[in-house]
Each structure stands twice: as structure tokens, then as C-alpha cells.
Image (tube, rainbow, N blue to C red):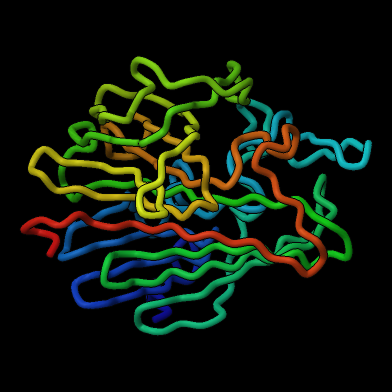
Length: 311
């Protein structure tokens, strides 16, 4: 149900609460962000106070592109398009056009919520799109579906993603092991713009798992190996518990961001499913073009592993 706080609305706007048995989630209107997901009282995503917006983009949705656009500039039909710079430290446009937009409610049940937000023509973006998302609790965990619809009268570029930070309760994130079944990563320049695809090697190879405490990284992976039609990115705790960020094959890229700057955490890890990598508006990699009225979508979710604490 939608929740209004008597002491004043949170900085991220209206809050939508979901419940199914021992599973509970909170989704914020601002950026359609996932603020909380618990199973049997165990917190599985990084959260933040009501008077704060999402630190490090924690839990927000990314559309109509994920990650960065170099110099906030791209070319359409031979004309340079200048987006607003939203990452001043590097001079890029980052994480799409809905980071500061409140999503509106379409429909809600106790277990699911559907939200949507319009992407209107603006600086460097002459298109009208709709981003719709559903968050649903099911027997396996949390399932998310994102969809972009082209409301313009001409073809429009489209890509999307999400920015969840994962955790396993009170286990220090630096003690978790991260496994990503990817055989390639994207090299970048010193401003984190991709320069090419290379095989994973050394500390970048996460196929056999690596302790998060050994990592400080901002790296996109691709050439993912699917299992039963899903890409699965797994965090494991020393006590045997695990957590999987899964996606369907609409998300052939995953960005791994490990930071020591998340408030109150020695390490925090974001596992970001993406339909296209950084700078796709310039490179064309993974970028889709939607005809007027056409839509594209994909699903991802968070699934706790089976153990004595996750039945």
C-alpha cells in the first residue's frame, strides 16, 4: 500500500510497501527506487534514511540509458545533441533522465506495484517515451519488469537498467564473495568511458568468485553465461547464505560497482543490470531503436538462496 508519513513525506516522495508472507519491500516514487527488501527480517538491499535521497544512486531505475554519455553529448542525424551534465566531476550525463523524477502509481496490490514516468523532450533529447516498471513479490523473491514505450512520432533510441546495492543482512559486505559468469569486460579511459571489450583476467575475473573486500571497482561485464535462460550474479556469505541478482537475456551487460563511500558501510556493492553499456548513445552498442508506438522490456529480480534462514 502507499504510505504517507504523518511527520512529513520522505525526501524520495511517496513510498509503496509490498508484503507477501515474510517478504517485504519498499519502493520510492523518486526514480522508482527500491529502498528496502527484507526476507524474514534480513535486509537484502542497502537502504538510507527518510530525509535522504538515494546515496550513490542506490536502488534507482535507469532510463532511457544506463550509466554515462561521454561529455553529455551525442549525434542524431548529423546534429550534435547536448544533454544536461549530471556528473559534473567527469562532465558526463549519467544514469538517464529520470533520476530526479517521481514515478506515478498505475496500480497496486498487496504484493505488486506498477509505476510509470514520462520522459519528455528536453535538452539533447527530442523524444517522448514512457518508462513503466512493476515490482512484485513472489515465492522466489522480488521480480522487477521494466518497459520503455516510444510515444514519439519518429523512431527513438532506448536502453535501460537499474542500480540495486545488495547486502546479506548484517554480514559485512567486504566479507561477501561475488560471482559473475562473464568472460569479457569493458575497458575504459580515465573518465570511465568504454574503449573496447577485453577478456577478463586477474582480479577482474569473477567467474570463480572474489571477496568484495578485495575490490574497489566500477566495471561493466558482458559475454555472460546463461543458466536456465537467466544470467545469475551471486553474493555468498561465509555462513553459507547466498543472494542472486538474476536477469533475463534482455540484459547482456552487468555493471559491478564496489565503493568505500556508501554512508555507514566499509564496502557496498551495486550489481547493475543493463540492456546497453555506458556511452551507448555514441557507440550504438546494445542500443535499440523503437518505432513509434513500439515497446521493449526486460525482467530482473533478487532471489535469496535456500538455507536455514531463507526457507
